[in-house]
Every structure is written in structure tokens, then in C-alpha cells.
Length: 452
Image 1: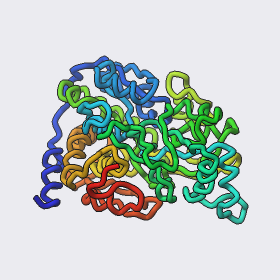
Image 2 (image 1 turned 180 degrees about the vertical axis):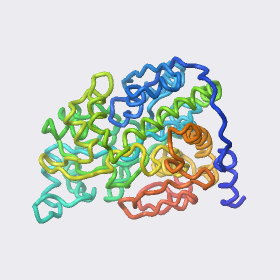
Image 3 (image 1 turned 135 degrees about the vertical axis):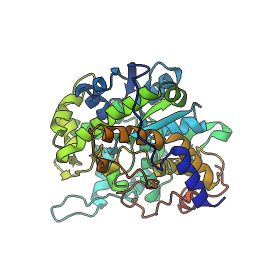
Image 4 (image 1 turned 180 degrees about the horizontal axis):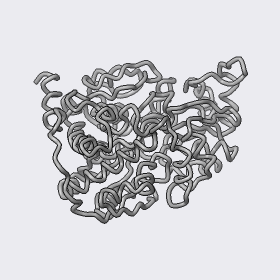
């Protein structure tokens, strides 16, 4: 079957041709418990609660912080949580059976961007002298991982491993960190699940391991790791504590990259369709509030997120990135207005291309052990990233006069590739309609029929 026919079939399956607007009935399950990790990008959940958007939908929601991403996913699968703030790769990883197997779907993208890569002061001291400088003496950005190669070599010469933390094997952070390292000529290692090796360190120049986000600064300070990739506020926390230096944001690796999603089990979505739609309506309104009037509500959002029951970090730390700036080395504050994007650029729409990029990286690093045809990527994206459900929620908000049609992608359009994205840091073009060609274009990474 030709690719254009596969895409057309996926569009029909997911209802992208623009379903008729139907009135949404009362929530079948009004009392809900939703999970999150203490990161600033859980903001749509906090705002939906604080601004009363959940109550507007007849939902009585309890928001509960979770210990780590595995616990969060497991509790969604068992039904202890009705849904959760998830890593964008988690519904995909679960559905294809990497780690825990479960049919998880998402119909809401929670944000774009929001991550950074931070190194210890000692590592930064070795990297910084070789970096090109601006006229004011500060390093030029973006910083390439090639500047890290001599540091990694020095560790290897001493017989030591260079270790870095990331938050979960199917996290954006893992793939962004791997992407950045490989673009600079460093191999981040391979997974070999077919051989029972899920360490992700085979042939690695840099050894990556899992650390929960709030623990990143303390783990760095203890010297257990030399650097990490994490979401905010945990990069800025390292700056405020004086223990590390963020060297690059994910906006510099791939402008307007997808980050978190809201996930539920497929069974839950089928059992409680009205509840799901009403949840989505509340979250869409919250995301819009976060970005409306050129981020005018961000100061209030920072105050909300700083509360112990949400993120629980100092307001100044959270504000450093949430209000459009980012601090690298102490005192090196730069404008990054799109560091956190919650609604603009159609951020909340679950574009199939997002799913395909994650799947391509899973294959590149061996989490998908065997080569798959292009149509497998398209079909998996359509199954997990449920644009049809999103469209129904969005169109109901327009019909109710709560949002404008221009706030959302045209329901009659294809809406396959996320718009408003910049180029990846290595200049390799992302081609979601031909994922195998994209995977094969990298110098470092599995290609064709290769397995580690």
C-alpha cells in the first residue's frame, strides 16, 4: 500500500476529517484522582484545578504527586489513578510493550520545550575554556557536545565512567540527551531488550542512568553523576544552589519539541468517554490561560506552582524559566521566551509526527530491537495519539463560545506534522512520513536491520 494511502487511512481512523460537534453528556465518573511529577510542566493540571475549570466540567479532581515515572505509569495501569501527566514517550513505550505492556493513549499534549542539560561545576570548568565566546566574554550558544568529548576522554583515561542522569528510559530527556551527545560525536549507548539488557549502556561513551527529577541536583552534588537532563525547575535549582551549570536547553536542540502529555488507559477512555472529554476541555482551557495575552498570567502561575502540593520549589527558581528567561552560568541570564509553551503554536494538539519522532529514537537506540516498516510507525502513532478525541473536545469548546476556532488546527486539514518547529541541532531533517530514511540518516545509531 502506498504511503499516502496509509496516511489517509490513519486520518479516517482518527477522525481528522472533522467530526460533527455533538453535545457532551455528564461525566460518567465525576470523582477523579490524577497523578503528576513535581515539574513546572504539570502546570495545566494545577491551573485547571485552581481556576475552577475542572469544576466547570462537573469534575471533582484530586491531584496527587507521584514518586517517579514508573510508579505513576503503574498506578494508571492498575486504576489507582484515572490519568496522569506523562512523558510523551510513555504511552508509546507501554503500547509497544517496552517495559510494562499496556494500551495507553493520549489526546492532549501538555507542553513544548521545558528541559535543559546541566553539568557539575568541575565538568563546566573543563568545558568552558574551549568554547567560542561572544564580545561580552560569555559563551556562544548553542553549545555542542563536541566540547564535552575531551572531558569524557579524560575520565576514560583514568579508567572512570562519565555518568549522566535522565528521568526515564522512554523520556524526552533520554532522547534529547542522546540526540545532543550523538550530534557532538559521543555514543550514548544502546539497549538490547531482546538479550535482556535494558541498561542502555552498550558501547557507550557516556553512561546514562535514571534519576527522579527532584533528586537530580542532590545526586549531582554528591558526585554520583557528572551531569543530567531534566525539566524545570531542576536545572535552575542547580544554578541557585551553585552546584552546576546548564549548558543547553531543549529549545536549542529542537525548537518547539513535544514534551509531556496527559495519558489514560484505552479501556478507561472507552468506559468514561464523557469524563475524558470533559477533562480535556478543562486542560485545554488551562493551557490557554497559561499562554494568553503574551504570558500575562505566568507570574500567578509561578505562585501556584511554588506551593508544596504542586512543585514546591522557590518562586524565584520557577520564575527563571516560566517567565521567559533562562539562567546558564550564574549571572548569565538570557531571553528564551518560548522555553515553556503550553498553548500557542497549537501546542496542545497531539500531532502524529510527535509520536513518530519518539518511535524513531526508540528504534535508533535499540529499545525497538527489530526494524519496522514505515506503515508500522504511522499506525502506532494513530493508535496512541488520539487526535479524534482532541478534535471533539476542541470543537465543543468552540461551539460553547469558550474558545475560538482559530485557537485550534483546522479540523478539515491533514494535521499530521507539528507546525512551528525549528531545525534539530545536527541539521538532520526529520521526515515523519519516511521514518526509516530518517533513522538511517544518522552517523551514530542503529540502521536498517542492525541490532546491538
